[in-house]
Amino acid sequence: MRLLVVEGNTKETWQHRESLGGIPYHRRFQTMLKILQPEAKVEFAFPADNDSMLNSRIQLASFDGVLWTGSSLSVNSSTPEVQRQLSFAEDVFHSGVPFYGSCWGLQIASVVAGGKVKPCEKGWEFGLSQPISLTSTGKIHPCFRGRTGLFSSLVVHRDEIVKLPENSMVLATNSHSKVQAISFRYRKSEFFGVQYHPEFTISDLGFIARVLSKNLIRDEVFKNEKRVQEFIKKMKNKISIPKSIFNYKTHILEVDYWLRSLR
Image 1: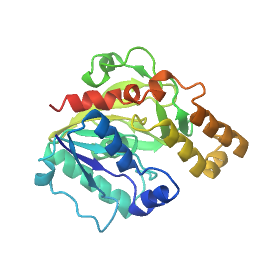
Image 2: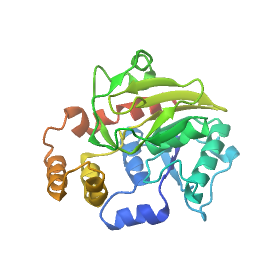
Image 3: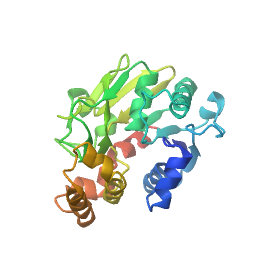
Image 4: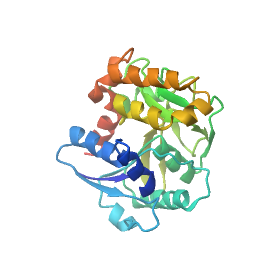
């Protein structure tokens, strides 16, 4: 199996994250894929960067699947690093390759296909998601075969989908954002994506809380620095964390079943 992982951040951002001790998103995806598909050949694309050599539509068609990571960017920005990603997503859809996205990847794909994204009315959804429920369509969707009843995931987002691409199927929802997972067909490709982050580990969330602490306090996700440190300690010690989250293989079930569908 040959897979392409698309990094949603600029080189400057992911290298800065790495310098602080964090794992860049494309590397986190690589680690996840090594667990799920040990024999898969994983390659990377960096469309946010102007100097990046990107696969053509013909080259993209040779992959078995494309997976798009999260990002610190906003899809509504008109900046070059966002516009280049929108253009590359259009190429992915034209290529016919199966397409998966987490959070930013979901938003990029949805906007390219005609959907709209806006800041969440309820602000950030951060840390442990509100309980996620499957819709009637989601309950029979092959990527959710491993999910029963309500479940939680790790989540970091300020934007959400407010208008669906044409012919979309909402697969999962919660009290914070109506769209937590969707699937749709656009151009030649089939897309499946989630608003949360199955690929994240608990330590990833602790790191993100530390790096974004000032923004999270400013936006009243946390009352003060003490609350941030309490959250980081909670992540580190796995306090009140559902087993479905700290058991990594359970947390990445959706991606596992999506990969199985490519065979």
